[in-house]
Length: 514
Image (tube, rainbow, N blue to C red; front, side, top):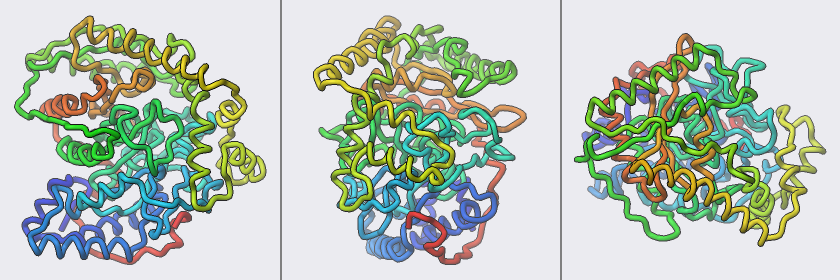
């Protein structure tokens, strides 16, 4: 009797160590959960492609044999994981990397990403790939969080009624994006851990709306091989989990793909007194109304929780500076659009040209495919493709823009404020543009659950922003927040009572990308 919605990876590992559960049984339970809530029932649509059962159970049989022989690959041995549909898995599995677009429905990559190799070395069981906002929300303004042409609209496990027609892209009913399925899948009990990708809020937003902990690695730290990034200067990968302990373990594996070796130290003996926190003025960091038309009551609930957490930190002996006057991304010349225009086209072209097979080999060909197949667009237009495609700039001109943006957002902006106030961390509401300035500065970001909006029950979070390479310190701080938080509230829309092992094999017809 296993409660997948409640239990962490560490809990599931303890059951396996005790002999109460095998890796094979756990994989069957995960697939059963997906069948119950993703394919049938509420149709959460968190999963865009499942690994064929043949490969899943070959893997779990091997891991169970290794465990019986006393050979464990690590704390994630036998633990299921789901990956965002930007990460190349072993070609023999037959799972495509599509970014949620029909233009890539027949593309085939040559090799798995080094990240996948490291995950397998760590003992995880990859169950499937997760749905996302098509092309990471970089296609057009109609791209509501979690909406893609291939897999439709992913849904929140916390909000009854699901995404309301006509809501703004980040309104209460939306699960957030673009790493939507990676968040929804963990909250729904498909796997206890997942990996997403983020340029601007794509990990933090869905994690916050699924009541999860998450950590985006410092941009440009990791190898991009086998990852379908589109703006590598600001993009990175990151884990999501129900506990900070699980998040630490998946973060350690991700960091094994760093371009240069990274030694992440996490000191669990640290206390609140060891850290100083800067909180931005939430009134200056709201989402624009075209993304989310916030009501006065919504703002009141967020601001109340935001003030309360500051007082809690002070009560525990932590140092709080308020307000931390971090520059708003709207004040950065060229800003995010300057980075997108400088990198999007060439990065997409490079990835596509390295595929083993593909109907499209360039951003221009994707644009043309979409024009030729309007019925395959899920109502999403493509002005954010056309802009970078038509933008003309020399490499030297872009290098100057990139340097200027990074300096204004980072050295002269975010990090200047941290230096002036002697801060370890910047804190801001996750429902806001803090992820944008953090991305431009090249900073790691994390989400911690902060509360729930009433009456919808939608979770919201607090974003933490650190200095480059400070993932260990951020986890130390996240452990403190976790210890000071109430018991995790479970989602309404999935059964979180104990479930028995009843497994029916899933047919390949259930997912279009199989």
